[in-house]
Amino acid sequence: MEGFITSVTDLFPTVLRKARHREIFLLLFCLTCFFLQLVMVTEGGMYVFQLFDYYACNGTCVFFLCVFEVLAMGWLFGAERMTNVIEDMTGERPSLIFKLCWLYFTPLVTLGSFIYSVVEYQPLTFNRWYVYPDWAYVLGWLLALSSVVLVPGWSLLKLSISSGTLRQRLSLLCHPDDDLPLTRKQIAEREDVISATEMEELITNTK
Image (cartoon, rainbow, N blue to C red; front, top):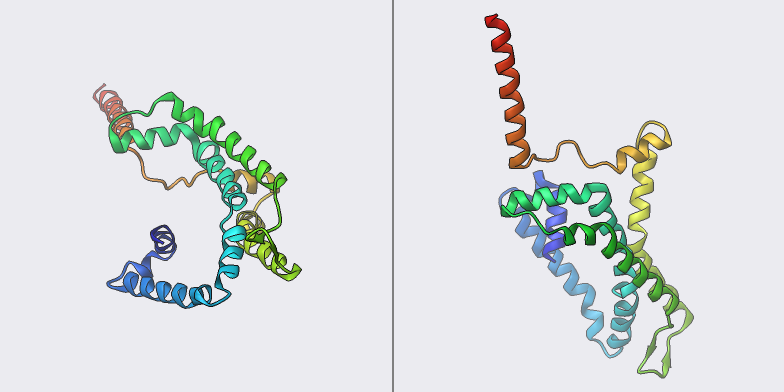
């Protein structure tokens, strides 16, 4: 829940970071979740719960999203940039094994797990004897797609509204924001460059 609230707050900071706005939004969100999930405590609630649990929260959806997350962090944001950020926050540079995990090991493991979960898919049953009707399976896959299609859907939307050629748009969308905060090391390096430039100008002017 905190992850969702933080993400929404980052999307609408001018609204939700005002006094008590975040708390009101959190209250409304909790009340909405409460009323929507009352159906799961009814007589047939376990059937509904298993449908949500098996399709909306299953490993296939999680692995699919994880593949894109680790690729975005390791290859788009950059493992070297992530290493610099962690060093800036903790004062210690992470081990090389972390960079190898971000770049190769974790993407391969999550991709392999996603493919395996798709290949080994079995239709949902309740207590190994009750077979859900066809419309329930359709509803289950719609629940699964509700989270999965957001990644390619948002990518296609940003790709369609960006300007330039297809290659330019892909390059722009696959590049980190240029307005990201500088680390302390980068700030120090920039100050050194500025000081060196000012010193050269001073020497030139004195001559």
